[in-house]
Length: 398
Image 1 (tube, rainbow, N blue to C red):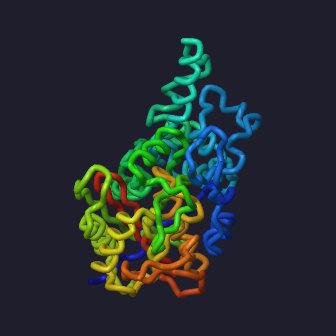
Image 2: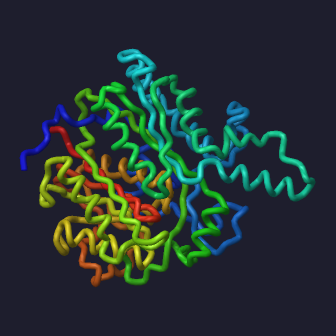
Image 3: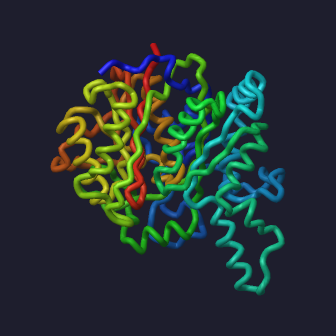
């Protein structure tokens, strides 16, 4: 199969991210490359469930968010913390200057948006029967709030869309943006997403018996379930030459079950194979897979079956970085896409954090210790409830 030409691929012109391990890509790489977990028990004082969480540093510092005004909610606080990165803002400004504000699109993913604000508002209403004066559903909880706030902050005026497909949300944004650019609808696109901690998802996962009372341990023989985190991240996609490119992706919807993946990972297999085909690659070309790896018994088993089917048993190095950040839900796609980009930039394999004893029955080559490696192509997997699957391939352009 002939490889796609580099000039057919989209360059990662700039990126920015905030996550439980800190602010910025350097802090993210330091944590994931060393397998240093940022998950903490009792990370927020309003959650009484016995679980480990990943909270973004500074998000509860009310004083620094006064400027948000009517937009102030936890999800948009995360977005602002990421968008204040000067290098990223300058790159978007340059794209607007080159193409025009109406030719820069915006595709973002989230699963729960600013639902934490709605939870707080209902709590207040229960007390005195009144909605809080500062509660603004359209600017907080509405799914389009993240796009409208980001567009206003960055000064882009092109088409915008919010994708909400659970945990694959901010992975699918890359493919939507790619289609827009290839169709000539826009010349560049900002992609990414944000999701914040809230009681709705915490109690939801707990009711499904998927929330672990211990720190999550993806691909571990003793894994018990997920730990939830929060994050916000953005990337600028353009046709301009770049050191790292988005080579292609695949999407599938297997609809096996509302909350349980297909035991053989058929939808995941389809997404990974489509991503390889889109990038013009063979399975043996991929040097690293950042797995969805949620640390639930069913998910890790299903994804491992899919990995064996596509890559062969025990071949490609695989790790999950959710042991560092937690499962950031609708932001997981952008977080782990950028981890894959960082692995390509640093030519190193990040380990699967919190691993004590790898589950040998899974039959995958789990990275136990971080190590240097010549990686030309990396894959990032994001699989959501209801069988909404997305796999992305990133490549070095040199």
